[in-house]
Amino acid sequence: MFIDVAKVEIKAGNGGNGMVAYRREKYVPMGGPAGGDGGRGGDVVFIVDSGLRTLLDFRYQRHLRAEHGENGRIKNQHGANADDLLVKVPPGTIVRDALTQDLLADLTEVGQTAVIAKGGRGGRGNARFATSRNTAPDMAEKGEPGEEKTVTLELRLLADVGLVGFPSVGKSTLLSVVSAARPKIADYHFTTLTPNLGVVSLGDERQFVLADLPGLIEGAHIGLGLGHEFLRHVERTRVLIHVVDMGTQEERDPIVDFETINRELSMYDPKLAVRPQIVAANKMDLPGADERLKRFMETYPDILVFPISAVSHQGVDLLMQKAAELLVLEEQKPELEEITQDEVVYRSNENPIRFTIQRDNDLFVVQSVELDKLVTMSDFNQYDAVLRFQRIMRRAGVDDALRANGAKDGDQIQVGDMIFDFVD
Image (cartoon, rainbow, N blue to C red; front, side, top):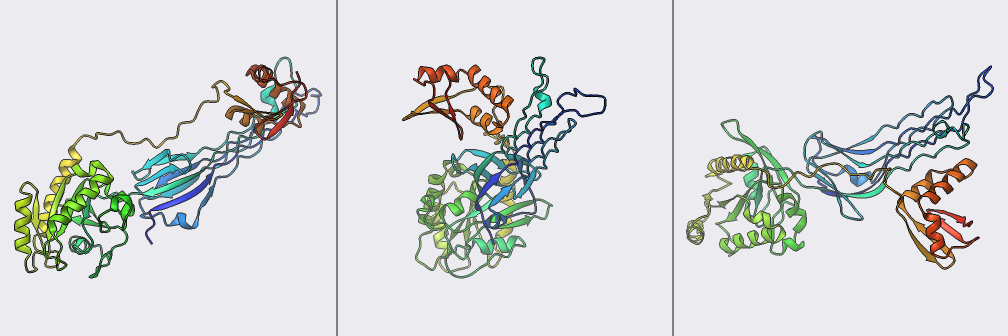
């Protein structure tokens, strides 16, 4: 089954908790802190696998979770880092954040990887908090939560040449003639419901990938017919073969068909309007085809037209030779756009703490990504951890900002999912 769109919930691993421990050895009665750090949580990493051609696996596996890092141990032993979760995707997969629609990765090359969700760092053990003023800190950090997000996967086939045209004009037949692909062929519209790929091998050892794409209809750019399910796969092709039915038995006009398809392509993406295009005038073995072809070429004298009959193989070899020549010319052109980088940018922990304060009746709500993370990683059952939290809040200017907003002794302050009493 061909699946080219999927939505998946992913969760990177949490960092392991730091350890509160002290050195306990014979003849060392005042051993210092010896709690180890927690291990790093596993990342969720997408990797391109050449053996995949569909997103079918994600139809049954909608939740991807990496392992958590191990907790720190005694004797300054750090917890083990968790292994990254490697998720195989087919070439041509685009990954977007489902909430913001931000592009996270465009995966086209075999073996290419992208970190989609970053694992949390391990919490620091109490040995990391020792200072000259506090030589035996009784606190440790909890592990940082791993990133959690919902992403949409969209597959855009990587084909060199694409066959476009109305339904039942002979695209599938042409693919079956020039390659080993065996698409479904029948005498009714929309026989092809999903893209089919075939490799065209020429006599001089040249090869290219040819895609038989589902038929378009008028209004496809707004989703009518197979609409976007078809058009997304055209975007990556370098050359288009526009198959036009010259032997039509349905009283259709090849000129109108040609103009309609090109209009739909340009309205979906203006770049498709300038993509190299060859017209394959198909079904030339049927009555009336010669007359229609003559009228077509008089209307479009500057367009490259190849009269063919896919059924009888007439003119097919010349058509494929020309497609290969155009493909070579396109590959030699410099890229006009930078290739999307498959990396996610994360902010440094060294950035100053940013926050806003909102009042909800008698509750003061402090909103801050940095402080929310601090709350999550602090163990408020540990007295030293409480003192450290208060110290960071004070240095960040939160206390002064609360006073400026009218906070008084005994008022409730919410940071993250914790509520504290304000002490002036």
